[in-house]
Figure 1: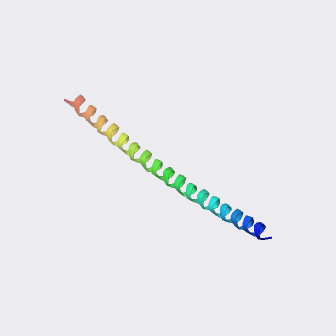
Figure 2: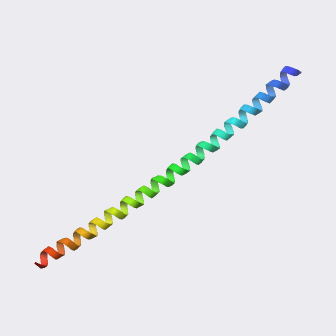
Figure 3: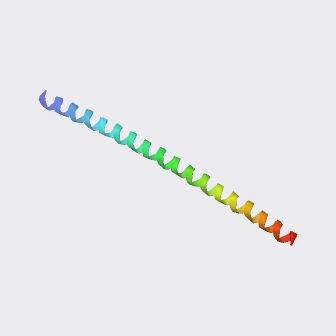
Length: 64
């Protein structure tokens, strides 16, 4: 009975550790996803800024 109790205790401990690891990995994945979205939006804004700036430059050159 003592060995069975120890085995059950270790199984529960392992299960809790696995669940904690899964939660930590999930949170890390969410953070990575959020960071990737921010980088994408930042790059998109830069692209649009330079595209608009380029259009203004081209229009200015044409008027000269």
